[in-house]
Image (tube, rainbow over all chains, first blue to last red; front, side, top):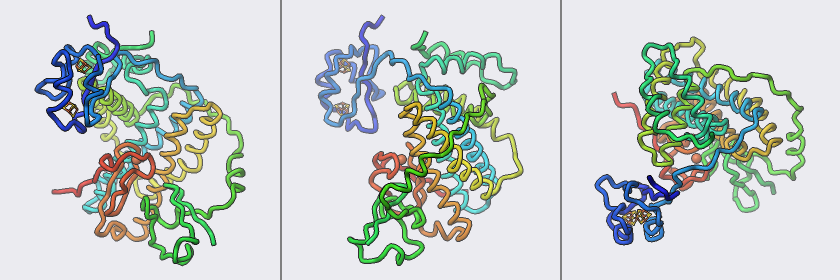
Length: 168
Length: 219
Ligand code: SF4
Ligand code: SF4
Ligand SMILES: [Fe+2]
């Protein structure tokens, strides 16, 4: 069982490969074939993050603090925004399906993407910031009772199993 | 000498430093910083206007508690959680939420509505700008919810830009994209049409490598 509270992770986009973290790590956790740091070996000492010239390593907690409580009124108002953005994404999608112009399709694709990002941001602020939150767990659990034939219960089961909950 | 400010990115067109009066700029002139059209500029006056705007009447919240989420909303909820996991380097969790999101996305796409056209989009956008965001801002200010306020501010700007792009598309058709590329900021959703991507997103300030080009359809 791990006792430390943090571990190192590497942002592969920023990493310029093969340098200082390999030398400073006392456990060899930074030296892997996948490019990601081996969290089994990492003891959370932080040496790699301090040495990395590319700012590619961050120390992340194993347990996140509870997400900020949201007031109901804010959540309700954000939900109206969410609803509208999702509807816009859907309209743009249908226009996209029915369009035969390359340029128009490209524009509609941008609109779909943009609305999805707006919807994601909105729902995040409406109580779904942390995947480890109680909200997320309470959202997932009832899905197991879904009546839809094709519903992927195995996905939900696995998520409930591997995803920690940081609020009791 | 007057000053005009871009409602999107805050760029100031100060006639004192420019050769051309703002009113004399051509109609297709664009904000040099974020590409917003001329119509997004506002005369910079001393505060008075803003105070009036702040006092929108106190709308009671319509009780809408625990309504069922639509498939589309469920999909966005799951893709948001997928991104949340990705940020924490929880790759398996991220992948699972993505799959769940895709499942709901597919479900949502099975449903067809008949009222889809550009006007329907613009109507929703107007409703967002005039009602949804305004009310959300009002309540978030009262509750001092900074996170909510930030995404409302970004969202309003992204929506304004989208509105102006749609309006210009309606009047000029595909000419409004002629010889231009289309990009979307992967963080805030800002749509940029043009050839010189700003070095940071004018709305959320991420560096340009997060502003992604939307490719042409190849078929
Ligand atoms: S935090 Fe310490 S143990 Fe973990 S990878 Fe970095 S240097 Fe190695
Ligand atoms: S020190 Fe930083 S840049 Fe160098 S290999 Fe390690 S993570 Fe990559
Ligand atoms: Fe952005």
